[in-house]
Amino acid sequence: MLRSEFMRLALGAGAVVGVLAPAVGFFLVQRRQSLIGDGIGHVAFAGVAAGILLGVSPVLTALVAAVLGGVAIEVLRSRGGTAGDQALALVLYSGIAVGVVLVATAGALDVDLFQYLFGSILTITRTDLAVIATLGAVGLATIALLYRALAAVVIDEEGARVAGVPIGFLNIAVAALAAVTVALSMRVVGILLVAALMVLPVSAAGRVAWSMRSTFVLSLAIGLASTLVGLSISYYADLPPGGTIVLVAAAAFVVGLAAGVSRGR
Amino acid sequence: MPVAVELRGVAFGYRPGQRVLEDVELRIDEGEFVALAGPNGGGKTTLVRVLLGLERPTEGSARLWGEPAHRFSRRRTLGYLAQRSELGGDAPATVREVVAAGRLAAGGLVGPLRRRDRELVAQAIDRVGLGAVADGPLRTLSGGMQQRAFIAKALAGEPSLLVLDEPTTGVDAESQESLAALLDRLHSALGVTVVYVSHEFGAVERFVQRLVLVRRTIVFDGPPGDLPGVWHDPSHVHAP
Image (cartoon, rainbow over all chains, first blue to last red; front, top):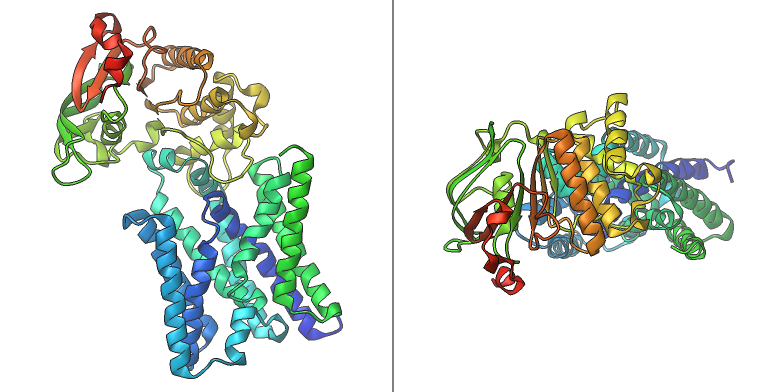
């Protein structure tokens, strides 16, 4: 498997996304905002469509759209007097509606579009990998620096607000990190499945971990293992990589659930 | 004694024309232990939010140590236990992780906790008597012990003012007494100004110096011993 360059590139990109997605998803899951990744993914779809229509890189336009969508969800939730799920619904449905209109206008309902919807990790180039690795490293470094602050907000947002912690900045930072993660993960698992890689490893880890820090570390390990094992299975069994990766992550969740039940949790 | 909290002629509503609070006059000196009581829906939590600068009064002024509450420059010295403090999601946070969150404002946003911060966290855990379970998951503890952990979190920030909003919700009667006694000990040992908000004041009545009853405005303010008998009648206290 490793003799093929396309598999080496795929495993490299998968490793970055496998670690980054649960690292960001950890904070979303703990704040009961698991579906935000899905909402941002749908806005990213509008970005992809805009890129195809304008003839520029769909990944770039998806990144811009995802960041705008992520920030919009957070602003609507925190300042607009809109309930979190309604803010998410508004952005999610608007995103997919804009995407459908733009795709139809561009006449691009074809294979090019499907690679973003369902992933196309086996077509990743060296340049793609360099971009994914660089942005992934920036995302992970940001999380490492802000981990304590983001965890404190998860534990007691109102107490932190009273003590003068810049809650708005930290919430926007999480939304922006989620957007970057969605844009990077598009080529690996596809827009439709990206949220699964942000949520399932964290949920699996939460069943067996013994502290926040161990939940975080275990989430990253499960995310990494899911992408590498999923890619290997897809290579040997000739299955679609994106779906296989997410099924492995789902299996990890079931195993975590069973382990948690056996330990009385 | 410096004035810690001062509300003058405060009125507040969440919508135009609404009056959740009206003509509130309240002064709390530094180092006092005050219970803020009243019926559910009587405006206690709103008063606390105005007092802490989370809401701006529609009329009158709210000041902390002489500064407008919403622009208070030493916010890191404010400790606050929101009503029904609870962990979000399924994270099995340990007591130590919860208490360490209280050092965020004072210890800085970026990077790991410094040694001095870790010492203050350990001290706060010991003060509330949770040393033996410090590295255990919070969610396995009783409601009373979880509230102790959140009190330790507030203490870890070395607060000048500690505000607890309904800290005994979901806590059994015995634990309520023990929580009140703990706050009394902390108040004596640390000299911190404490505002204890509750719809029931039985548990803290014998510890506090002042009892303030809120029903949109302040209807009683004085030592618990001076409280007219009629206010002890639960039906009276709880009537909106």
